[in-house]
Amino acid sequence: MSLIKSFFIGIMLFIPFLKSYASGLKDTVSVGFNTYGDTNDVQVYSPTFSIMKTLSKHFLVGFKMRVDAISSASIRNASGDKSLVDTVAGASDKSGFDDIRFAPTFIVSYDDGENSVSGGGYYSKEVDYTGKAIFLNYVRQLNQDNTAVGIGFSQSNDKWSPIFKRNLPKDYRNEQKIDLSVNQLLSPTASIQFVYSYMNSTGFLSSPYHYVKQTDLARFENYKDTRMGQAFAIKGVNLLTPSTSIKYSYRYYKDDWDISSHTISTEVLHDINKKIMIGARVRYYTQTKASFTKDIGTYKQSDTYFVTDYRMSAFNSYSFGVPITYKPSVDSPYKFSFSMDYYQTSDNDYIKQWQKTDNLKAIYTSFSFEYEF
Amino acid sequence: MKYTMIIVTMLIFSGCSSKLVRVMPYEKENFAMTKMSLNPLAERSEQEGHILLIREASAGGDSSFQGGCGCR
Image 1: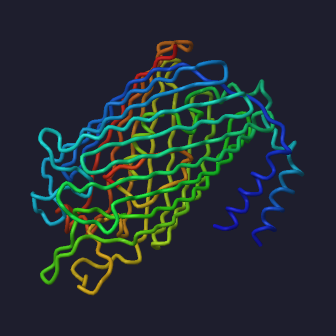
Image 2: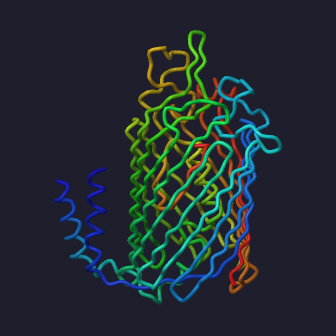
Image 3: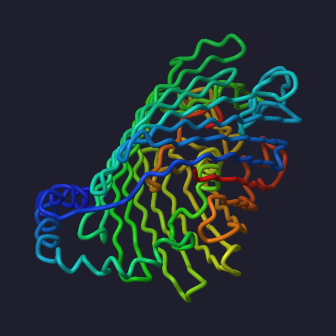
C-alpha cells in the first residue's frame, strides 16, 4: 500500500510540468425517488432533489436534498427487545415512519477548463444521529484532456444522541477521507481510472443499541474507537461496438481491524436506439472478519470488544441489476433513468443469530428525472 | 523505498508525457456518450454507495463524498 501511496504522490508532484485544458458547467434540476427493501423488514423510501445553477462562465452553486423515510416493521435490536431501537440496518423508533433522515448538501464549483474545484457542506439529521461534513475536490486536466488527476478531502464530525438514556464512552464519530485519482484515456474507445482512498475514523464506531446476549452475559456492542482503512480501485470502460460498452472495476480494501475485502464488478450498456439505453451488471464482494469478532456464543465477560453486526464477520455478497435511460432526442434537455438491483449475502451465523434469516436479501431501485436549462 | 518510488514515478511520467496524449480532440466523440461514463447513472451511484456503506464493512475507492448517518 505504501508503494501505491508513493506512486500517487509522484504523480501529484509531476503535475506542474504538464500541459492542461478543458470541461464545462451546466444548469440542471433533477428529482429522484429511490427505494430499498430487505429481508430484515427494513424499507427505505428516499425522494431526492437537486439544482445546479451557474453564476458565471466558471462558477456554479448547487443544492441537493435527500430524505430517507425509514420503515422497519419489526423494529428490534439485536436482542429482540422492542423497547430498544435500531436494527442492524438502522431504523429508530417513532410513529409513522420509524425514522426520517434529512440530508441537505451545498455545493460550490469553479471550472476554468484546466482546473476544477468543488467544495461544500453536508448536514444530516436523524432522531438519534447528527452528521456534519465538509468536502473539497480538485481535478486538473492534463495532456490535452487525456489525463485527469484529482484529489479530494472530506471531514465529518458526527454526534450520537441515543433515544434512551445511555452514557456512551464517546458520543461522537469523526471521519477523514482523502481520495487520489488518475483518469487516463487509452484510445478513442477506452479509458481507465485509478483511485486510492485513505480513511480514518475515531469515536464511537459501533451501535449504541445492539448488545450481545448469551446465557452468561449481556453486554452492549463495543468496537475499537479508532479505525484506519485504505482502498485501491481500478476502473475502466471500453466501447465494444458503436452501440455497446463494457465497464469493469476491482477494489481492494484493508484496515487496521484486520478487515480486508475484494470487490469486482462489470456492467454492459447498450443503446437500443438513439433514445433508449439499457444495461446489465453484476458485482461480487468478499471480506474477512475483524480481529475482535468471535464465534457466536463464545464472548466472555472479560472481553473488551463485543460484536452483533454481521459486517464485522467474514461474508460474501453478490448483486446484479438492470439500468435503463431514456432521452427523447439527442439534444433534448430531458433525461430519465431507472435502475433495479438485487443484493444477497452468503449464509452467515451473525445474520442467522440476530436477524433470524440465513442471509440478507435486498432489492433497491433508483429513478431520476433531469432537466438541463 | 518510498522516495525512490516517488522519483521513479516522476521520471516515468516525465519521459512519457507525450505518449499519454493518446486521443486527439477530434477523436473524443465516444466519450460524450452516457455509456462511456464511469458513472453513467449518478442517482443510482449515490444510492448504491450509501447502501453498500451500510451493508458492508469496506469503503473508499470511489473518489466521491458520502456523508455520515446513524445507520452505519
